[in-house]
Amino acid sequence: MSRFAHITGWGTATPKRVLTNEELAQLVDTSDEWIVSRTGIHARYIADQDETTASLAAEAACRALAPTNIEAHDLDLIIVATSSPEHIFPATACLVQDEIGAINAGAFDLSAACTGFIFALNMAAQAIRTGSIDNALVIGSETLSRLVNWEDRTTCILFGDGAGAFVLQGSDRPGGIYTCVMRSDGSGGDLLSLPAGGSKIPTSIKTVEQNLHTIQMNGREVFRFATRVMASATREVVESAGWTIEQVDRVIPHQANLRIIEAAARGLRMPMDKFVVNLEKYGNTSTASIPLAACEAVERGMVKAGDRVVLVGFGAGLTWGALSLEWVEPERKVSPLVRRRRRVFAFLARVRSFLRRIQRKLEGLIWGTSTHPDR
Ligand code: UT7
Image 1: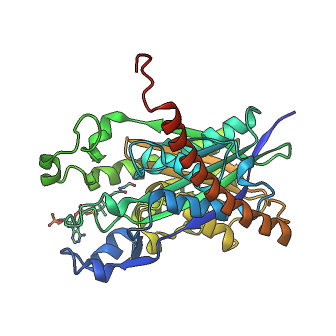
Image 2 (image 1 turned 30 degrees about the horizontal axis):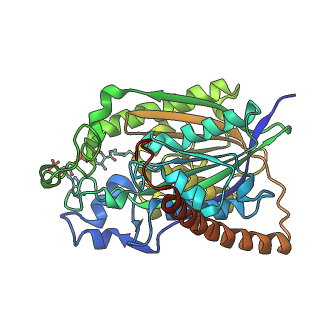
Image 3 (image 1 turned 180 degrees about the vertical axis):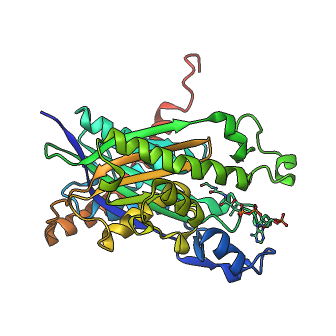
């Protein structure tokens, strides 16, 4: 019997603070008029000190899990797609796993820049379709504001912070995630990069002085690449799903620049009203942009049961990709008792995490920290 991967829960999280174009114009030599006409962006969310990639991801994850019929401990897999992980390691996904109490889940980060959420969804859906797992949580989460050079007007106007999450569950009912196109071209890696802080160029006073720990971008070249691949990837994924372009009800594109989305629509000869656009409020939130737009589209009734939907994105790497899915309305009957039980579980997850840390310390004291046989 065929198995399908359905999206049964979705949720988002955004920082409290909003930064408008007018406020940005007081920081760098720019204007609301320039930013709106060149990008379509009016504002973006910026994380405060206490808001991090993991905390936003965990918040979005809890919202996505809330209406489903599973608990965090039923999750088999957590993938966090991110370009601004909390650390190089441990994976941000492991921090989320601990925070939400997903004690039976394997967790890892996926690095494919803004295309990451599409790649991660495909990985999770494939694992469900093969029968190797039942339940997965896929998150796109970013605090790119921490990686931006706030004196570089060509990049700091673009990016914002936020997170979006999908819960995927196996089902015998047709629908859910169908096909995916995943592409990359490392020869364009230098067009959009964060050069320092990795193993090739470790952080030093020199790298900080030269701003190599912040986002470097050739905007015009990325723009050219994006307009080309958004249309071609959409065409390819539509064909692989056995659909025609006319049969697509909704396209949810990566929210980088309104002009890029309009160029894709023109290239595909599709009306703009089939495209979900919300970048005016969020800016470019990299891996979070597609789930943020998807969640908003569902809440606004722009995506309904039976709709044929394409997600399409591009980003650093270079990477690009598209994913086809048929939206299935999940059964959502969560009793007040289950909601109360969830609150208890959330509390217990924190207690468990605390006790595990104490246990590890005690084990260290009792057995010693050295594993050397002679000591
Ligand atoms: O997730 C992927 C992330 N990256 C992207 O999606 C980036 C894709 N690229 C873009 O969205 C666009 O290339 C930008 C929005 C970054 C730039 O727009 P553009 O229409 O390609 O502008 P441009 O780079 O050709 O610059 C035009 C002019 C330049 O002045 P001159 O040389 O013509 O005198 C820039 O110096 O605009 C100037 N400029 C600005 N002016 C006011 C560049 N940034 C700004 C600014 N405010 N913030």
